[in-house]
Length: 226
Ligand SMILES: Nc1ncnc2c1ncn2[C@H]1C[C@H](O)[C@@H](COP(=O)(O)OP(=O)(O)OP(=O)(O)O)O1
Ligand SMILES: Nc1nc2c(ncn2[C@@H]2O[C@H](COP(=O)(O)OP(=O)(O)O)[C@@H](O)[C@H]2O)c(=O)[nH]1
Image 1 (cartoon, rainbow, N blue to C red):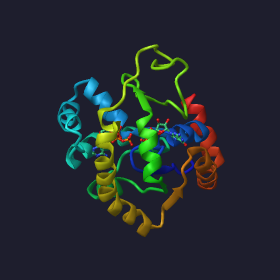
Image 2 (image 1 turned 90 degrees about the vertical axis):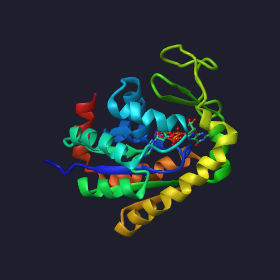
Image 3 (image 1 turned 90 degrees about the horizontal axis):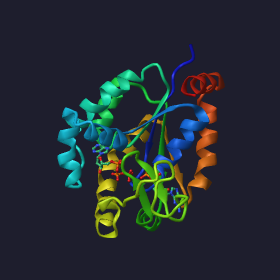
Image 4 (image 1 turned 120 degrees about the vertical axis):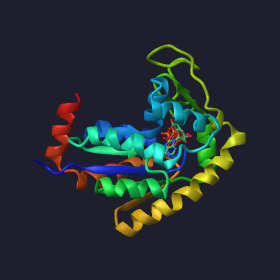
C-alpha cells in the first residue's frame, strides 16, 4: 500500500485555509478536518467536549489544549487509513507537540496574508451556521444575497469577524502561531505562501502537493471519497 499523506494548513483567520483545504480535498482526495467545524459539530451534538468548548468559544477564547487534543486525537485515530489535511489544528505549540508524538507530518502549508487583506475579507465573510459553509460577499457570494445556496436558510456574520474584534484576534493569532511555525520550519516541512489572492496561491499549493502525493494514492483516495 502507498504511504499515507499527512498535511497541516496554518494561517490567521481569513487567510483562506478553509477555501484552500476544500480545493485540496477535491483535487487530491484527501480528507479535510477543520477543528472549527469539528468543534461546532460537537457543540451541536452536546458531547462532553462540545459543552466544555462552547464556554470558551462564546468568550472568544481558544479552547484549552487538553480539551482540544482529547477531541482531535480520537478523530485522527478514526482516519488512520486515509490521507488527511488538518485545518485549525494545531494552533498552539503544546498542540503541535502532541500531534508530533501521534503522527509524522509530510507537509505544512503556511499562508502569509497581509493584515489589511485579512481585515477586508473577514468584514465580508458570511456563514451558514448549520453547515459551516462560508461565503464572501465579493469573492464567492451566495446566489441570493443573505441566503445559503443549498438550504435557503439565512446567513450570519461571526461576532468576532466584525471589525472591532478583528485586530485583537489577528494579533493574538500571531503570538500563538509563531512557535508553531518555527517548529515546522526547523523540521524542514514548512512551505510558506504569501499573496493577497487565494487564486494566485492555489497553483503553487497544487503543484507542491502534486510532487508530494503519489498519483496512485490520489486516485485511490478519490475513489473512496466519491
Ligand atoms: N486548535 C484549536 N485550539 C484552540 N481553540 C480552537 C482550535 N481550533 C478552533 N478553536 C476554537 C477557537 C475559535 O474561535 C473557534 C472557531 O474556530 P475556527 O472555525 O477555526 O474559527 P476562527 O474564526 O478562529 O478561525 P478562522 O477564521 O480561521 O476559521 O474554535
Ligand atoms: N476577496 C477574496 N476573498 C477570499 C479569497 N480567498 C478566500 N476568501 C474569502 O475570505 C474569507 C476567509 O476565507 P476562509 O477560507 O474562510 O479562511 P480561513 O479563516 O483561513 O479558513 C471567506 O469569506 C472566503 O470566501 C481571495 O483570494 N479573495
